Length: 360
Image 1 (cartoon, rainbow, N blue to C red):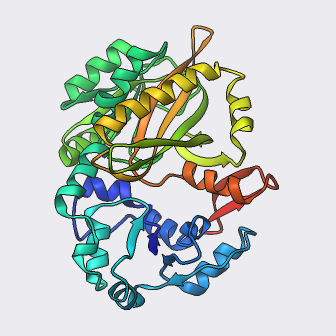
Image 2 (image 1 turned 90 degrees about the vertical axis):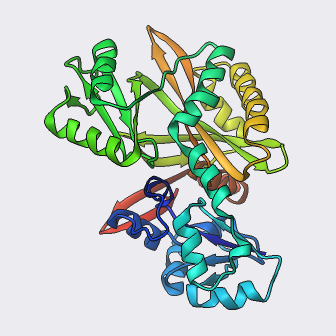
């Protein structure tokens, strides 16, 4: 039996590293409006923790998926968890804030990860970890692009921009779109950017440096397509591949996923790249992370990648970021199993003051 929780503020909570963490308004609204999301992959004996059962049912019904769901609220947690010693808690992602929230709701701390484990997840979720342990070795194995460097001062940021002319700045812990800025020294390739390091941009950089200790710098790449690979680690040294995630972002913000079987997604990607390259990268990731991660982390994770136009040739960026948590790619994989090819796309929209999940 599992208790599933949608806590989309997870990446921001990692940055704060506080037990008592108040998410930004947008993150609170996202959690409220899509609290039903884990019902999409919940089993018949699982529970989904929500703020409002009626609202969760209403949101879930609008997906058009028909299944039984067990929605519960915080006041029921103590009774359910104390009556079943085998219960497992599975939030969208583990951090100090969600652990504290569950303990305050009456859940025994012995059922939850300890501080050492939470710190491991936090450190591994830092963008610098993926740059060192994934991007660097993967670049040595395949014909690819990809550079990610850590800056601890504004001077380092200026030097990087002087060399690359267009750059992407990323807060070390940040979610899709938020915590990412595009900067150009004047050459514009059609992307939303700041012209140079303006006072406003320098203020943002200095704020990230003060709060998170550093900032990640990457060259801007002429992206052709977003995609990712989804995996699961069993916590005993084994990492298995779950499937492809073909998705779309707009200015770094998640927009939607294909809901298709693997052959259909492979057919989409093979327009640009050989499937043998993807297979090689997949195997390399499994080998690397079975050693680096396999015995430390149990749960789903995803690696975002992209196809890049480099001087007229399409090449692979094998690790844009590592998401050590549940992902929308995993959600799409679950939906591809239940939708039976009736609907092909999943997207998240914000309309009428609410977040909505649409399948069509």
